[in-house]
Image (cartoon, rainbow, N blue to C red):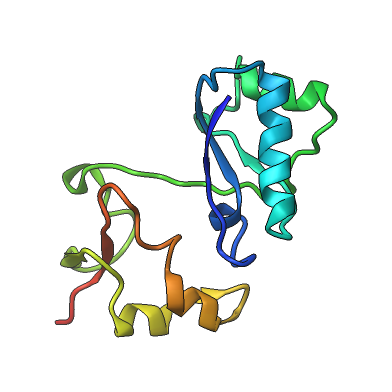
Length: 146
């Protein structure tokens, strides 16, 4: 299991978890041990995010490996849905479609609307926005003003 290792001082599980993305170049159980050591060295609990379709992990070898090693499933999974804008359905909203502004990073107005576990965005969230700003193709979207 090759992994993208992410750490952000404990701000959100996604920003503080390894994303399983490919073959590691060493036996998978050893790769899991390396991930654990990396997170423990930073004072964070080891967590591995295993991407899979909405239907479930199916035959995910990483999911099977972690299960065999006794890793628990996280109680609240993160659902990330993507689609090209023309394919996003209007839903059951009344009225005309809302225009959307896409930028390379969240602006102050967007950050002011963001809530983390019911509270305002903590300082670490404002400082790094590592979860909100992707490395390859960063984008932030919000409804445009009318």
